[in-house]
Image (cartoon, rainbow, N blue to C red; front, side):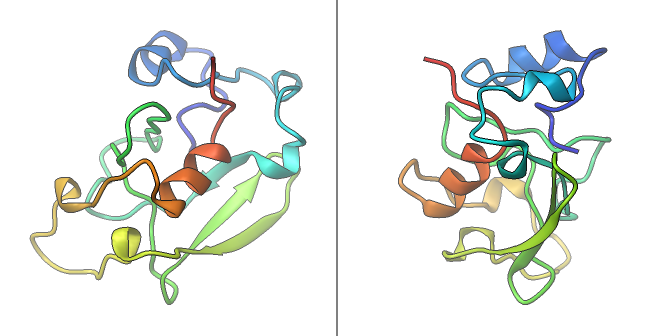
Amino acid sequence: MNSQMGNLYSYGTTVGYNSKARAYIKLGDLTDFPSPSDAWVFCEENMCSMNDGYLQVNSGTPGFPDVPGSYHKWNCGFSFADGHIEMHKWMTTVLKIPVSKGFRRNSVGKGITNPDWRWFTDHAATKLP
């Protein structure tokens, strides 16, 4: 689950980890997105970062504290706040991670200009000024 969504009980932790983006407690809070159809709630997580019940997002620093999956020919399944689902194909090699023993999340590339990081964070939460 997207760390920015539905975090009534972990709001302080989420804001501490990702102070550059809005955290949402209920569906009605999604007023600053163009629409709930642009806000992802659930996605597949890569096994190299699977450690808890939510996928941590960092909208301020390029990189992936938790890594979205790429198990379907370099696509990741996302569900959105309006209820629709879609497969998103990663454009760069940053998230095209093969399933392999010993791969660690700190091996994932970074870069604020990376289109995959930008799409992922733009659809995770509204960035704060």
